[in-house]
Image (cartoon, rainbow, N blue to C red):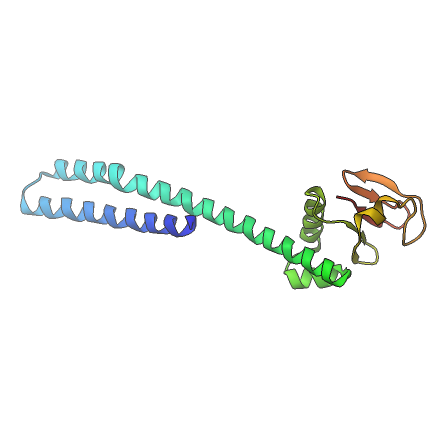
Length: 171
């Protein structure tokens, strides 16, 4: 909505500016205004009428683009959660292709979902597989499901196996 309104305001500001310039030139050519008065009218008309519309329109356009980017990321995160929960385990490469994103962006989305408390499961980065798992199962783990190594706390909601690199995510 903000993008559309921004575009409308920018177009409106350009139209108003063109009308102001055209009117001042017509009045000047008729002899109703001197050159100085026409120039002053153009300057004041553009500053008072056109520039505020252009500025506010540009602000709304940029804000709308930012909101669209946030909405796109949220949509991809919902899609990611749905795929992992429905399938139980998903290859990272498949996720990246289906979501049309890079591995780094995918990793960032997973960590954001963990920080929001929306995802519990684990990931084996070396194997390239993301697993969905119940949080209650993961809270009882003290050994890695992949290599049986001792697990270590790696951050808020993240437990990492120092031997194979598998990360477990707790909400």
